[in-house]
Length: 625
Image (cartoon, rainbow, N blue to C red; front, side, top):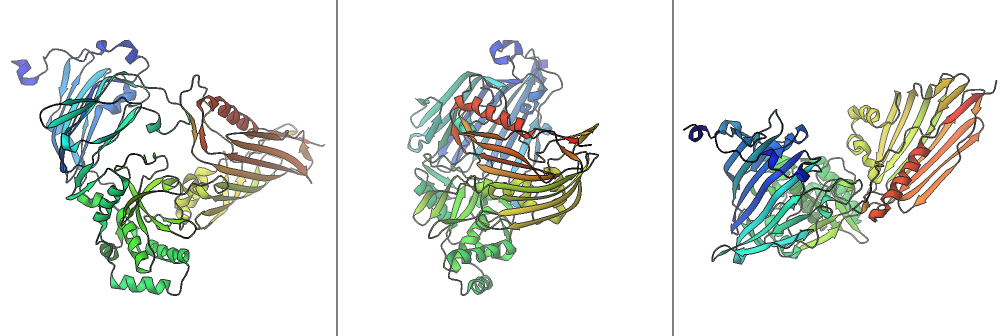
């Protein structure tokens, strides 16, 4: 009777002792079983079932005892179940309805959102324990399937993982595989087939610095439909052209502007013949008139709000603002294109040979005579034509009347991503100093420490200096910021600082490190038998010239020898000279971008270690008297 009432006297299962030793060794958690299944019912209906049993071995894996289930207008949660077992496999807790938190996913800047999340926290205070969790969703669409990665964490192994898709034979989906075998395909009945991938005894590879993106390292797969429907809009996803035609259909009829806006934008650009200059004026108009908010309501997750509504309310998300920009350009005779892209500094690129929903952002492309102008429409401060690390150097899907076309956004070269610094430093007898420093940041380095966000924010500039000035102890006397908002932006920061104990004093000697504020500190971890290629994703140039005025009657005991290093990864040089009682220190570092063979990793770390050593060279000053 007791087992019927509370279920706590059932036979033990999932005992930790049953896990093979090789799956527990050096692990924080072990996935005992995971089953993921999508079932395609029609072009506008799917179900998703998820089941996972995971043993939490210690507190470093407690986050895996939490379950989060997202849903919205098109997705309903049919069930959530969960049970907790102790290390012997004895049931100790079963999920109750009041254990489930249900709240909006409001993020602080979403004006319209019907996204919600159900959350369950099943973490326990005693380790190890096992959590069994499962849920089922019903979706009123067939559009996309999240990518599946055979990876949780460097310290999480798995006994059995299954991923399957059930579908009517006339709606067979496409798939893309990386380091994954072809699926087992079986007929379930006269109408449905199943594709099944199964993985047994999975032990993760250890993290390797400077590796390719995750989708180029760990086994993973993508699934996408051919025919689909989202929000009543049907389409085909068998080519980028057809997928773009579907998006074009969503955008139709949403470009009408208010009469007052038409008048303003035509007056603003009257007499301007140059296409780039006219586009710049329209972009400035957009920035001054609108602001960004997130819109995650219904089909609004895919379809832009009408331009007339943006006119009225003065805000929109990336889709609405990009559509608005296209409409403004159209009004003054310039063709702009709504372009879907995968945004984020460390986001993976769109996989070009697998047409599917892979974007999370929208920008605008304006083809020009010699190149294409690229417009980020969600920022009120972004320099005209600059994409930076957020959307630069990646594929986007340009939506045209003829369908979708894959395009490539600009990459930024080392000579464009520069940090040039000049400084004058006066050291006194006690080792304290005063310094005037002028640093210019261009290209991607314009984003250093969020500089691009605070360049016009006088209330945030001092905080930026304190956070990004690599000097142990300093007081700010004065500072100034200015910028040039170009396609390759430039920001200049000038500082006057007091530097307490810049140098250390011992008897008649003064010791200091001439590299004032640009010491290299990369990962130099030693690795044996590296597996992955080495990837350096950014090219840049740093140049520092620092003049040190010495205390009277002091001179350098010796000057460090010049250093010159060069290999496929980059170039480094440093040099010292003495001129009229001043030490002049010059440092230049150029880093190359590229993919390099795994066996070159030791060469990279040797290069880095040599730079670190050179950057930490000291100079000893001695008193002549």
